[in-house]
Amino acid sequence: MPEQPVVKRVRTRHFQNAKDTGVKITGLTSYDMLTADIFDAAGIDFLLVGDSAANNVLGYDTTLPVSTDELLPLTRAVAASVRRAFVVADMPFGSYESGPEAALHTAFRFMKEAEAHAVKLEGGVRSAEQIRRIVDAGIPVMGHIGFTPQSEHGLGGHLIQGRGDAAERLLADAHAVEDAGAFAVVLEMVPSAVAKRVTEELRIPTIGVGAGPHVDGQLLVWTDFAGFTGGRVPKFVRQYANLRETLTTAVTEYRADVASGSYPSADESYDA
Ligand code: KIV
Image (cartoon, rainbow, N blue to C red; front, side, top):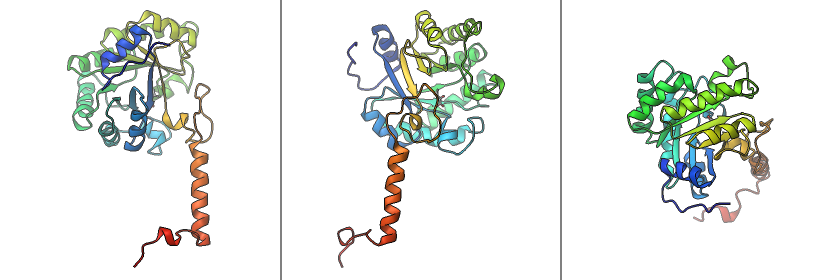
């Protein structure tokens, strides 16, 4: 396994260096200062303040309703809490599709008001002009193709993308994102073999979310990887903890201790 270089602050050039030298890039979502601090200290290379905050923080059913105004404070909290990790702000549905100027306006807000380091937006060929306009203004863009949750109704549900003949369309999307100037591209729910082909054809790094091992980096939604959400998680998620169980046990004990009078004890109380 290639050596992880010591990097004071991750920049876009480190993503490219990683691809060029075969070092894997690691990303997680984060929506708050506490997780951002922990993930950053653990050496996670980039934190995505995903619009998945919609389902994981704000109580929406899908990512569609979440707005820029709702994501800005979460992004600001994450950006303010990292020392090393690169912070990517997700541009929400409806904030960039109408054209390059709308996209640039949203990107400016995330960079100025939240101090993000880059933005991410969904779509390949269809979003290329938006990506180019933002990159031309000096803002790094991470692309996102394959399954794009903001289009879940158009795509007919949570379906794997790029199977069979659709592989060529996925490749065209990947090239469009690269040609528009993105520094990296997320491949979500794509067959392993297709993700491998995209990774071999592109100069920029590919970041997989359910795209198998032959990509340049991996990204997971933190509440999934830490077992916080409960219920079913996608097949590609490996759960590294069961925080839901841990927290449920803790809160149940706390409630019982309060009810029985064993909390607080004399040691946990102030003397006169
Ligand atoms: O919002 C998000 O968490 C995402 C990743 C799953 C790619 O866009």
